[in-house]
Length: 590
Image 1 (tube, rainbow, N blue to C red):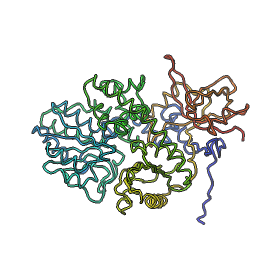
Image 2: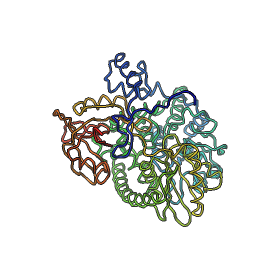
Image 3: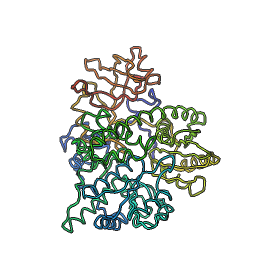
Image 4: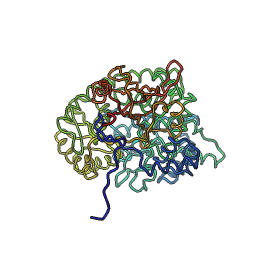
């Protein structure tokens, strides 16, 4: 005994087990006190001050936080190891008219990274070869055959969003120099390249470890432009390319903190100008007809860019993001949209089978996993994310073909999955594996899957995975239905953009009467709640029909409920209204 008392923090609104089985946790007394003090010091709205306090922002820093500037937060590129060599060699290739190839990963981060390089070069009157490996035939990252082929025809190969672990393939690029611009976890040794710029190298301090690959590429181009200016020359307009950096940052689930937040905020403003043909065409086909937000990037645009690499032609995304031709952009966007629809169908089938298998195996341990013959490698990552969300556990989903499994893994906060996967590869349980804290990929022999997953579970348990049940539902405050207005939503948006490590705020509405429920779309529940005093608020609980949440609300029987969710602006026939994206509920009054 150390003499301290272990006093549990009371559940918010006394909800210890909601319809979804979660405990509600609200702002602490200290946070409420600091928020009130910030209101007095800044005259900002109370709801916004509460949100800033929970983000760790002090009153004196509130103004700067609400208007983050890239120029104030962007790190000096030369703080990254090998950046000097990378910028010098790249600029040398440009000035000498050397043949340049860009080898990119097949996801959004890789495509945006490639588009940054290609667009910069085109603005300087240069072209480069784009190479994106096929996910099924070649797998992730550089391979010997592709690199040797590129080296035979080029003087410089720039690997983006890949290459840090590619010792053999980079050695195979005989006759050409190689630059690696990446962010995946590095090993103890680096490949023999001219430069390996990666904030997650083992000899980096980790201060910039939250950057995606596109930001690493952007930083190299910043340094190249700086050197051109020093010589009296002019580089390409990099601020006009922040739409690509924003898309990559959000789609790669990089935390929206520090410079990432500033890059995304500025990138959204650039995107709103609709100057990039590929993103303009993609936004049109995805139905994005309002000011773009991080939600649009993560859930509407990103999946479509990814669709080519998942189940179609691997280079479609990078081609879309880098093209200057509106007609080509429209054709590519239409093709990616169709591929995304196909991806959703395949994903649904794999998800259903994986959930059944994972539940039969058990979901109470430190790891949930599933493996199946013929599961498409292009959707296993998405399904792993769904398993993680459903169980609050790190998840691995593996597709098998000819005795080899190719899988993807997704982690939960506080558990470094990439390091654990990398250790499995070092121990020989995987043919290869790597990634970063929240996501990783792996290749494994079918006969070693059980042993590999058991060992992975052991490693993750040491980090604390699997100790809890459903995650607590964190709430940012309490609102009355009448206070949920468009103006309030716009005030809250000032603290955005929201995404990984900076979730959009979630509010509770207490003691509400359920006025109406009806099913809309496929399995969604439209709910209208009121406070009994005339104020009412519409909400929608996505996928709630048939769940405990949907059943409780639809069968309310006149009971009153506390409800919780995120506020958003709904636009219908040109009119704006506040709407609750309803995530949970609990009977009021016990």
